[in-house]
Image (cartoon, rainbow over all chains, first blue to last red; front, side):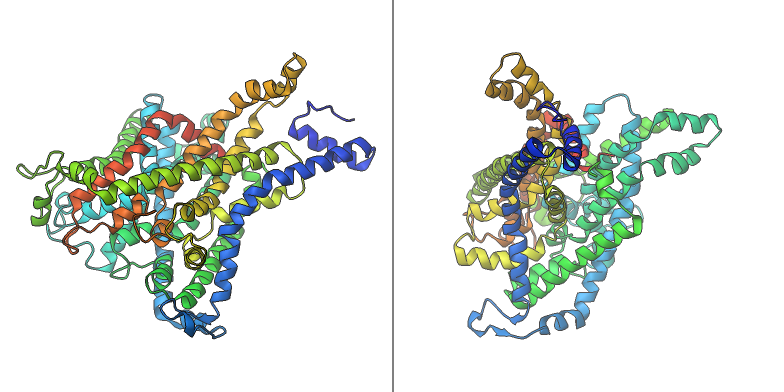
Length: 321
Length: 276
């Protein structure tokens, strides 16, 4: 019964379950010790993670009910939910939320398609794997600010090359003069930088699909298209959903590219950038904190929607259950 | 179909990944006067080349040198601390049965998805009142919090694969528990720890939001923030080629790490994220 110390974690857990039913003595003492040690080992991680998240978030919640500006800290006064009312009735808030959702939907959809194509190529390729792996990691590792600069200058009509390469554009077309082209330019930078990450997640999922099943479908006469939709995609559903969840939440927080490429001008501002502008640039901690809370709530809402809508089971996806 | 598809796909991937990199390098060799006058085109036009002038300017710029130093120091310290703390936690998660394990994993996941910008306002306020604003620790602490989730997930995935019974086997063969740990477990765990360290370093090196919000001088300002604040003499016409040179310099460490450790990074990214 007491499965010696050689037990692996899995066997150990089983032993403990059995231990709960009967013969408690030695085992329960050991499990109590294990409990205590486990908690001690995770404690530093929990403390560090909470210092910078839970505590400031509570502080934001508290500050959000005050009219509080750092330029006049003495004038701080309690205003109840006024900041939230101000934010939620301001068309700017809704426009920025709309723009942010647009960034999220478009970039994730495009990244999913291109990322999947890249994953298929990497899965099938037999030569130059190291070179491909290295190249795909460069956009992943590069600083987002650098990516933003590279694309901003690429789209610039003064010093860039994009206008020269696209035959249907005038040489002096200003990408950053109007909101639609500026949003496209920002999306290009975002998509360029994050597609590799998406493709690596999808590659891991693709590796889980059994080759036998694909062969069997082939023998049964399924076309390439049918094999893709009926065999490959359903079998890597978990990986796709995890990738979409991660990237969607990441895309909703878009900030760096906007800050570098347009500084929020011509209607490219995202909700993150609006929050930043209020708190750090304008020192309006009261309304800024209200925006922080709203941003936090909207991220939770999106996570909830994706998990519910697509029935993502993170525990199952990571063999955690 | 497959015969042509794969090489075309490979070519596409290479162009996709490398074109903007080649572009920023090419841009960094355009002379600053050419940029001011406008010099469209992928490669510097003849007569617009600057040689290494932009790089010399970047290296001789005190602000930029200081920012590189800040970035290296802050990222390395944050990585070291984060990996140590994450290793403890991941060991507990992979090896021990304790109450609250699910809580730790859920919390790590929640923090990985946290909207960073919603924290900078209150953090800005807090850091100013306790004197952490515009200091190295003021950035190291948030970097640790936000790299811990990734490090814990990656490491616990790695640790779960380690055949721990080897430790006992070594002890049965006469090794002391310290020897068993050092000679058997450490070599098995090292690749995972190392991979987690690389991913953590990338995060810290890449950060922009904390970098611009929690610093005000070159005292602690990291490279991404320094690049974005660098406007040169004419605020309406940014010195594109100089910035490009700075961008290339700040990317060199990333490229070196990627070249050396690409296999480990891919293993870490995928094992940490999807184990289905």
